[in-house]
Length: 136
Length: 293
Image 1 (cartoon, rainbow over the protein chains, first blue to last red):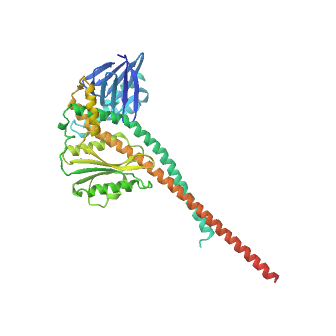
Image 2 (cartoon, rainbow over the protein chains, first blue to last red):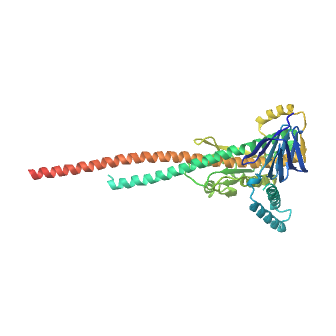
Image 3 (cartoon, each protein chain N blue to C red):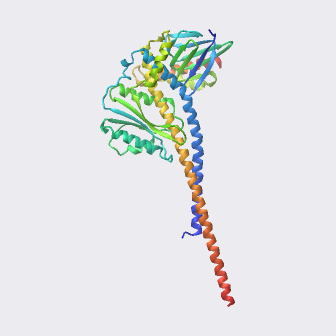
């Protein structure tokens, strides 16, 4: 069996990444999980967070929002609404979103219609900040 | 007979019009290119999502999910996507005709309309028909959050049993020359028939069962609303590309018509000018003759 597998990250706007990689770590529904080539078939929801992949000595990091990961032995597909590489992330915007969300949490209760949406954008912005700080 | 000055003025005004239509054509061509790229870019996501849903639907019990269940009631939601602005040939007319035909088949009191685009809003302004929401298409590129908001409104209404089915009417982009109006059923979601055969084949290949996290049913229940979003997003993209395509073609023919008109008017102008010169010459000659005699 090959040591690498194909990692594809697609969003509604573009195909962000399509690449042979050695290893992948992603934020799954029940915590982070790692994928190597030959993994059993697996489908999970993703939480917003940091997704990292390794190819030889090269390490890539991508901030992702909520979505899905479909893992097949030779191919992993990540379906997310938002995904950004460290270069694309704008620190200022992310920080404003976090600040705004924190402000909103003070008044919002979990029953509000906007609550889930705010949590989502909050988590995504935090993931962005994390990725940006790590990779600059 | 119009005077020389009149014709000259006409020519000038037609030339101005031609310049505008030409510019609009160029702008539309550029926008069309971008819209087409966006459709292509959105395709992998949509295809993948559909693939996931159909493979999941075959493994779990899809009938259990409310978004897949047909209630059979008459209350219909119709989403109509038109453009904000005119000057795009028959683009809006064709769409409006399609919805009128759709409405004629049903009882209008059962219908609620979700209008997108100022043209459709104007069309239904004075009609006795229930308009659930209306908003402009907006300038610039359609974005995903627009689509997901729209999808959420629709799925919510569907789940509250306010709507029994939801259709979407938009213009499908085929080429710059042809755009076809489409009526598509958005809810309840029906997994495409053509896909079913493919799933069966795939099933045989897959000996290993999929692992699901949290569980197959839960994954499916978050995927289905996403599917509606993707469909809505695609409809927006297609309709945006169609609009630009239609505008480009109609502005192209408008420019051509203007060119033809300018040619005709120039010919007329020259003829009249010639006639005037000839007349003046005759007068001069006539005058000289008279003096001689």
